[in-house]
Image (cartoon, rainbow, N blue to C red; front, side):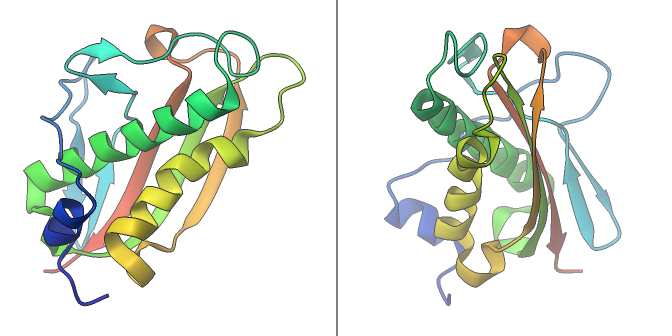
Length: 154
């Protein structure tokens, strides 16, 4: 894809939100050499959690997929604030955590909300390795949390 990620976001009608302030002792993103690592991002919009509870109980898989997309936007905002979104050369790894009700096994489809966003924004450079993990609880009773690693220009 030849379009810069910042321009692609505009084409998609998306704007990066303000960086979500940490809820504990960490930074939103950290650069180490050619890589930026984000902290886990929750589906917070203007400081408000967009979905609480377990996926497969209080939260539908479709709602959770949208929450993963919001988490992805928050991760991109953290990267943008640190190095600029257009410095991203490759999305390397995405890890998604899904607060799952007993018997819920659709974690990969939920985290597709973030993965598909990264493909839309970065094209081929948005293809990444990934883990989608079901967990018992997440901070603030969030339904989804996403973190990522990207390679950036020197």
